[in-house]
Amino acid sequence: MARLPAGSVDAVFADPPYNLQLEGELLRPNHSRVDGVAESWDRFEDLAAYDRFSRAWLSEARRLLQPDGTLWVIGSYHNIFRLGAMLQDLGYWILNDIIWRKTNPMPNFRGRRFTNAHETLIWAARGRGARYRFNHWAMKNLNDELQMRSDWLLPVCGGPERLKQRGRKAHPTQKPEALLHRVLLASTAPGDLVLDPFFGTGTTGAVAQRLGRRFIGIERDETYVQLARERIAAVTAEAGKGSADPALLATPGARDAPRIPFGWLVERGLLQPGDVLMDARERYSARVAADGSIAVDGFRGSIHQVGARVQNLPACNGWQFWFTRRNGERVPIDLLRQQIRAEMN
Image (cartoon, rainbow, N blue to C red; front, side, top):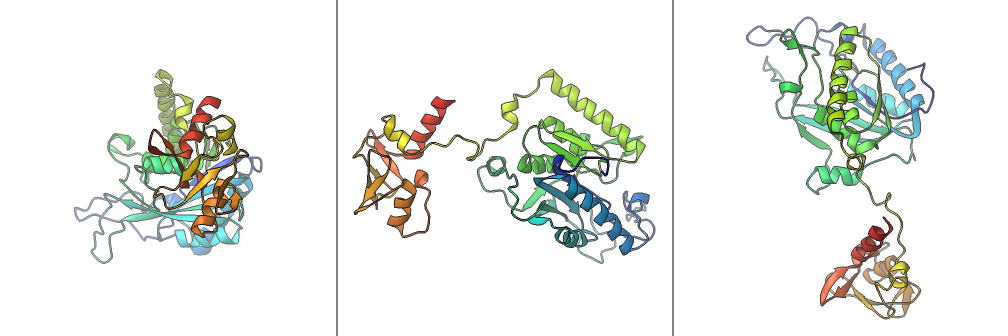
């Protein structure tokens, strides 16, 4: 990470060692060994050593992020609270904690605790006041037109997606591609550069490749590196057979669309001076002026100002509040705005 230039990446996704602190192996009731709980890369001398390691890579990640970039880090109860405190100490601004609720968690074999059925992701901006990217409409579309919540119900990695060698898991903690799909779709744009400093077998790279994002993966285990190269090469070959239209890899948001002043509707004859606007329940009405303002009861202003005034509210989205009539039917004025946008495109 120290070899990379400052401010060079748009997002970081990190799946660091969790420091499980288990002594010896963890066995199932049938005496088979649970993978991933006694790996050398997850062992630290003590909590102070883990904290030094974590602070070092989190500091480098912040240096590498561009000013409006964001970082995602995933962990369990063993480490996520320590990482959260470090993020705040280092100047990051926490945006959300996401609960990944697993549909098929591993049971608690000893029956002495609750089943660990979730992991936590922290999503943080590089600093307070950053104009970070959040693809609200992409998340809403992904969630059947409902706002995406901060609890995500997803299965653990399995089936053909799970990489294996000689019939065994190639990596004990491989994350599901669905999780990375949601992370990258939410917080990056096509062409953005994503850094994964704990690349493992390349889940971040595989998903980034499919979504038209660029990526840098850092991994020290040569076996994992080779598996990641093969996996991403397969994704690249698959994409080459029939790559998706780049326009389908992004979800345009309201900020991405060209600004259309309300007055343009009057200029272009979609509305006439004197036309009446009303709200959805026809409690309020206003008349359109030639300059694109509207008037009601002696008050004249923008569609937003007048909408707020009649409702006695501090603010109002006039595009969504006001309607006009077409062939006797109420039509939202936002449809007229979309008509102009379509002509511009």
